Image 1 (spheres, rainbow, N blue to C red):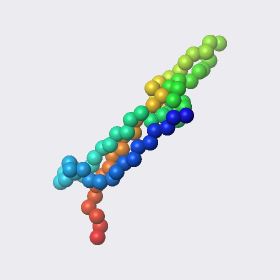
Image 2: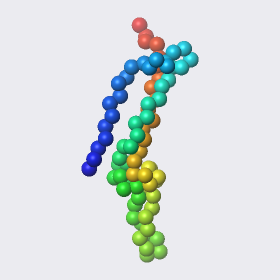
Image 3: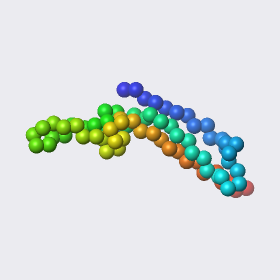
Image 4: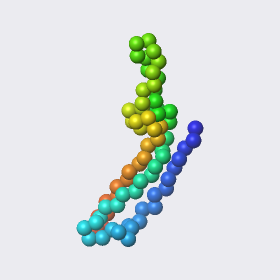
Length: 76
Ligand SMILES: [Zn+2]
């Protein structure tokens, strides 16, 4: 099974300043563990096998991570 890993280097970006203490990082294309990357499940409906989209990844088989970092002044 393939695996994807990203490393996040935590450092305040140049856009972090007064009134903008949050930043968002996205990490795309992670394998959906719920359906093991298939994107669907087989299920039976009226004695017929039908494909049902994975409720977690909505059929794509992959997930994107949206990571929000909130910066706060250090307590001394
Ligand atoms: Zn899935």
